[in-house]
Image (tube, rainbow, N blue to C red; front, side):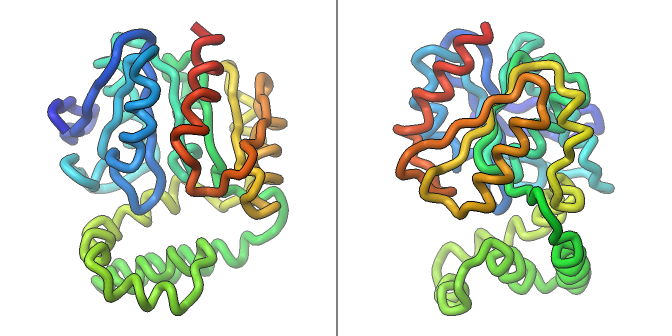
Length: 260
């Protein structure tokens, strides 16, 4: 990241800006940094000024205690200010929940696109609460590896794959940002689709899901679109939660251009 901005609480945020045109800020999900969405930024930079950043506590960005979801909304406000005072937002997975919350909070946002924000449109609150309790305990005890394992288990990764991941070179990097799992957990709230909050969003929302993703993710994504007054739902053929930037970028570009 070659640039920095300061959030309202004094936290330094690292970001990069590429391309020319209307501003778009990309928001990464759990266990990721801005590098995760950099390939998408490259494909959008022909028509947009794209900002990629490390969310607080990750990569080259600092952190300031205590954490609150409102602080991450203020982070986006600072980035939008650097972009010229208005921007579109794209968020993937739990980053989508943050992008939607920013729009609901009244930030100067033109439009919001999200990909498979993993809400549930049915029960599951008890399972979610158990995850939160176990995650909080693991992080409080400094068991970062166990915290990462809890998250990977929540995503449905098989135990043998998690065991292999623990032996891989990437595991150290995952443990380094493990405390931010609590941040994404907070952003997701109780895990259910926040229908009332989404109903307060006054800008267009595009909710995307992969046609090859689990049915519950597609159902939750559709519920996001249905809850936003100007929401649209769309599936991308052949895509899973690991969406291909080559497939995603043209869809986002068309949506963002239509809202300029």
